[in-house]
Length: 193
Image: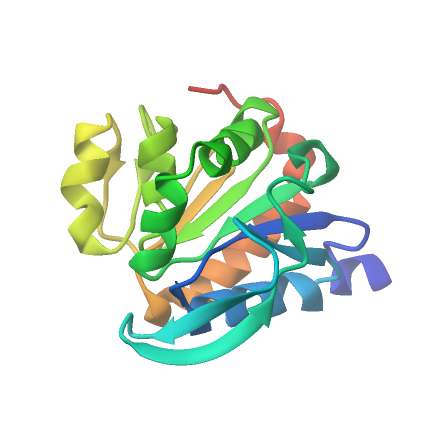
């Protein structure tokens, strides 16, 4: 009975984010994973805190970084969460170590969830090639140019990759994220790009 209420018990989730992360996408996604029983770590480019934003331009809250990329090993995690905000994934995609971290989850065939502008990391790593994904509409051309199929859906699942468009999609995104993270062992058979 406890397992059905806490489908992520015993799982560790890496949440990769930097300054500029959209506050609600970070907080609600993390809370959904934690309420499902997961241990979640905020991983970032540097130690200290990151600054979250509301609607990309209004400072929101600061959050303590629990591991830097130097301290985090993808092999220690069962799944990866990539919240959006425009500045956050733009900073991440310019950092080769961050992109290696993202790529490792696909190479290790682990589930990944990305919302809003979060899929920019997937474009940068080449992981949208051959996949059907959704995102904030402004990424449509980037995704298509990277070999992905972009759809305008509240939530899209493609072989362990969960994507959504914006904060209004968070309820559907969080539900599917928890479901895919819980079924991680099934995802291990997916083909990597």
